[in-house]
Length: 445
Image 1 (cartoon, rainbow, N blue to C red):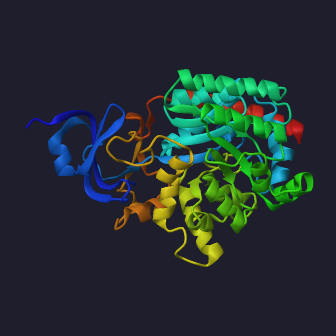
Image 2: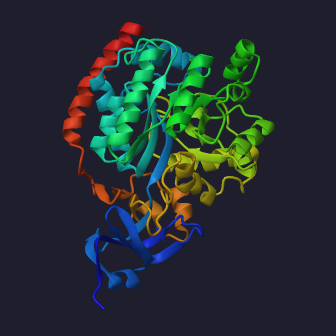
Image 3: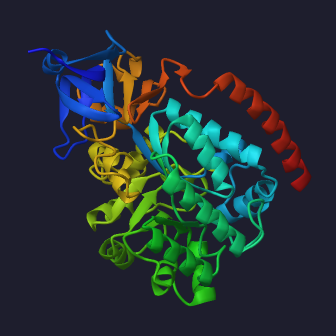
C-alpha cells in the first residue's frame, strides 16, 4: 500500500500527547495535514503509513502540545523591569498606569509583537490578552501567527484608547466584527479590568455583550486582600459575591488571579462553571499572596495557568511558570504530593484551553486536533537522562530547549529563526521605544 500524503511528519524520542489517557509514547511519530493532527502513533507505523516533509530529521526530540498562557498583557513587554519590588497598588498606580497613559498604536503593536516573539520562542502557542488599543494587539497576533483571545481592557477612566465607556464599547464591537470576518486563530474576549477600576454598569454591560456574542468574559478578581477590603467597603460584598450579585458569574466567566478566595467561594465558582487563571510568579513578585490552586482543582474549579504581564512577571514563558506552580504549593502546604507534574502540565495545556473555551482538542496532540505543536531538544544537558518526560517539562526545562514551534500546522519558529517575525527589525524598534519609555518614566517619577 502506498503511504498517504501529509504536510509534515515529526519523529519524537518522546511524545506527550495530553490526550484523555494522558499517553506518553516513546519513539513516536506525528503526521500533520491541513493545519491539524492527522495521526499519532509509534514511529515505525507513522513513517510507513504517511509521506511528508520530516521536520527536524535525525534529532532527539521531546514533542508536546504548545502551551496556553491564559492571562497576560502583551504590550507591557515595553515596561519589563521598569518598576520592581513593589506591592500591587503602588506598582499599578505610581508606575504602570502613568506610563500606560502615553501608549500609542505603534507602542502597543510593537510591544505586543515582542511578546508574541517571546512566547513563540518559548513554546507558547496560544494566549489570552487584556489591554487597551486591543485592535493593535490583534494585528500583532495576526502578523505573528499565534493563536489568541484578545480583549479591549475596560477601565472607568480615560486612556489612550477611549475617553469614556461609550467609546470603549465601540472598540469592543470593532473586535467582535473582526472576529466574525477575520482570522480563525484569533477571537475577542470581553475584558473589564477589575471591580476597583469599573462601575456596576460597566460590568453588567460587558457581560451582556459576552452573552449576546457567545464570548468569554475575563476580569482581575480577588487578587489581593486589599482589593477584597476595598470591595467590601464600597459594595458591602467580597469581590466574588459582588460580581455574582450583578449576574456576572457563569460558564463564560474567567477570573484572573483568584488569590483571596475562600473555600465556599471555590464551590460557588465550580458550580457556576467559571474558570480561574493561576498566575503564581506575578502573585509572588507583587506579594499578592498564594492562590489556593490545589483546593481549586480538588473542588472542581476549572483552572488554567498564566504569566500576567511582563512588567510584573517579568517573562511570558510557561515552562518556568509551571515550575513555580508546582514548587510554590508544595512549600506552602508542606505537602510534596500537591500540584504534581501532570496536574501542572494539564493546566498549562488542555485544561487551560478548556478554561478559555477554545476548540475541542486544543492543548493536546490527538487526531483531528489543531496542529499546535512544540519540540524540545533532548540533547540539552539539563534534560539528560530522560526517564519521565512530563517531569522534565515541569521541573527541568527552562524554555530555551524549544527548537520548533508550530501553530495550525505552520512552523513559526525553528532553530533560532522566526518565519513570520523580522526579529532584527523588531529589535531596532524596541530599542527606540525603550528609550521613549525611559524618558516617560523619568517625567512621571
